[in-house]
Image 1 (spheres, rainbow, N blue to C red):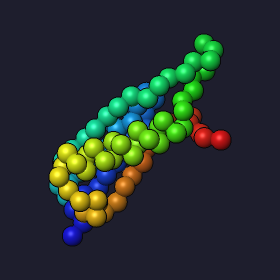
Image 2: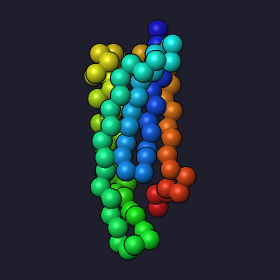
Image 3: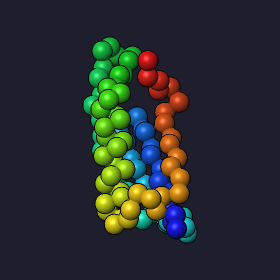
Image 4: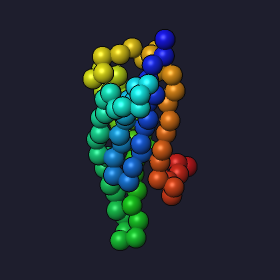
Length: 87
């Protein structure tokens, strides 16, 4: 039976994954910053592949930390900064 909801939070400086149980309690979480590139004073850039890699790793971390199987996850939600895009 699927018991958990995973959330991936793509923030301004890092990626966080959280795992919630049926009572909406945090079962596990993992966070890691990603590299900030500043080509000029008014710009900040990120490496899309680095963010993708960190996202996958943070998800693996919470699954391992919670000691669950991926097939116990009912849904995954993703949040991100509004100004972010990948071209």
